[in-house]
Structures are given as C-alpha cells and as structure tokens.
Image 1 (tube, one colour):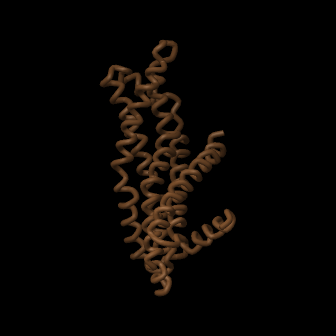
Image 2 (cartoon, one colour):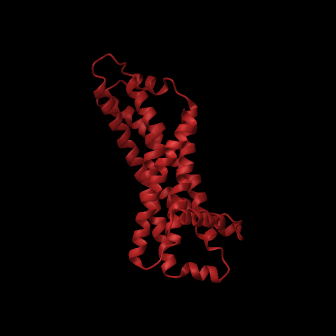
Image 3 (cartoon, rainbow, N blue to C red):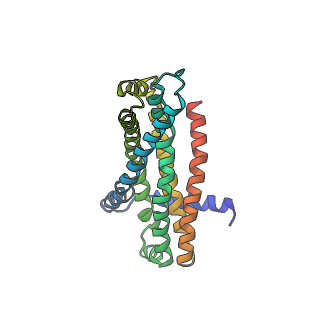
Length: 246
C-alpha cells in the first residue's frame, strides 16, 4: 500500500473516530479508564527518568564550567532550559510512544484479528469512535500533567544533587532557574506535548486497527506504531520549534 493510501486511510479513520458519541456516559467512563491506563500508570517511569535526568544534567553542566569563567548559576539555568524545552516535552513522549503506543496497537490489533471489531461494526457500533476517541481525549488531557510533573521533578533533582554533592549551593541554583525565565517556554512545551500525545495515540490506533493476519502481525503492528510515532514526533518537534521559537 502506498504512502498516500495510508495517509488517506488514516484521516478517514480519524473522521470516523471523531463522530459524536452515541452514549456520553459510556464515553466518559471509557475516557476515565484510559486516563488511568495511559497517564496514572505511567507516573512511575516518568518520575524515575525525570529525577535521574535532572541530576545528571546538573552534574554534567557543573563539570563543564569548572574553569571559573562561567557563573555557577549557569548550572541551574541549564537544567531548567533542558528540562522545559526538550527533555520533558520531547524525550518523555518518545518513551511514552514505546510504552503507551505499543500497548494501544497490540490491544486494538488483537481485537481486530479476533474479530471483536467486526462484531462491533455488525452491531451498529462505531468501532473507531468506541475504541480510539476515548484514548485520544485521555492522552491529550493527561500528558500535559505528566510533563509538568517531569519538569518539576527534574529541576528539583538537579538542585538536590547539587546541594548534596557540594556541586552548587542551593541559593545559586535558585538564581539560575529564575534567570531570564520566559513563561512562554512552558506554553511552548505544553503545545508540543498535546501534539505528540495526539500523534502517539492516533498513529498507534491506526496501526492496530488495520492489522491483518495473526499474532505475528500484531507484534509487527506494535513495532510499526512505535517507529512511526517517534519519526512523526521528531518531524513535528522540528516544525513546532521553527514556528514558535524562531
């Protein structure tokens, strides 16, 4: 199948998914379940990665400015900028593409090969809306909270490791994280996060929804979902950064 066929089929699936839900109460219940699966169950890995990355950035930056020519508060500034601009809003979604995206693709792909989706269609249920829309809404809603938490934990971990290791006094670190702070940078990060959340769920759902074959093909769809999501995240990251920061 050509790239253009995939693109057309993808947007047709989205059009079907974004139809008005027939039962709002059921839609809300499914969305809450997806918030738990996509967001709440990912808090641990997001927190762990953010804590260690903030600490590592602090140590690496301090090691590079030992000459004394660069102000020590640069450590706090660098940790803040790295966490807000790139690690939390970009690297965390890439990791989530592996965790959440593969799970979505395998879940929907399994339903496809076991003919559960066909059964929904026969009963007159909009299978795309039933299976995909709650996941998209849940991801777009919960991802920004995960990313904000990641930013906070990474910056806090940098200050903690700097104080405990005598790399940088906490007062100087605080000066660095406050220096030349621009609130728009947080808004930019959250805009990226919402776009990436949509990409991860929609692309993964597409790969799973059109799975054909057996268990081997489900695994192949999961791999495709992760690869395509990461590629689109990288391309979107470049475009959004070009549009919003330049």
